[in-house]
Amino acid sequence: MLTDTAIRKAKPQEKQYKLYDERGLHLLVRPNGSKLWHFKYRFDGKEKTLSIGVYPEVSLAEARATRDSARLRTY
Image (cartoon, rainbow, N blue to C red; front, side):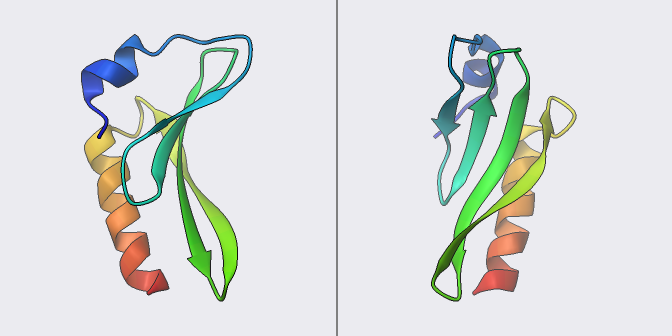
């Protein structure tokens, strides 16, 4: 499970990478230093991705709340 400290300490690397939280929520850290929230889920048997926003404009708590809201709508 992610913490705000771990997110702040995440540094860009040569290739983008993901920091996983739980229940489909992850933070994509890009080589240019941007950090983007995504929620991966399945709908009608197909994998989908919902873009939630940019960290720190969207906090960890807000990203989790959006994920929980989206899960209620997709199940």
